[in-house]
Image (cartoon, rainbow, N blue to C red; front, side, top):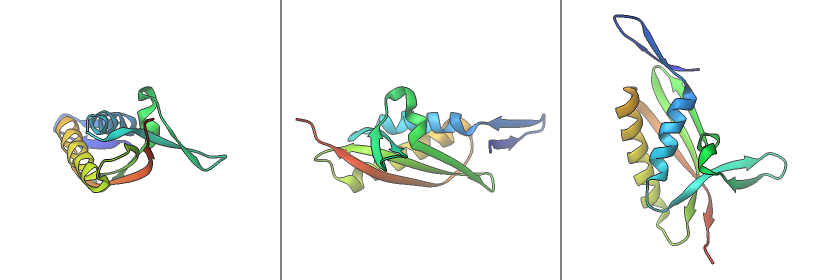
Length: 118
């Protein structure tokens, strides 16, 4: 269901994929994040998504004209998870509210894995 903004001249409808794209780009700008994760239905494993498919690791819900965003991320080894997650929440909330004008109620960051560089 798309997010809707009622104006004097009509209704502005913003698709959830647009909001997910804004959230994904904003999250990727944060230090410590490697990428978004997508669950492989057959194996139950999570895989790192390429930048073209960021929205598959993000779910957007609308409730009473407010947004709830679920992010599934993979972080870099050696970062403090709680600090990176808080930075992601702040950045995504700011960007989505700035670009859409719709209030964000909750952002849930689900850390699906840690990437260890060799």
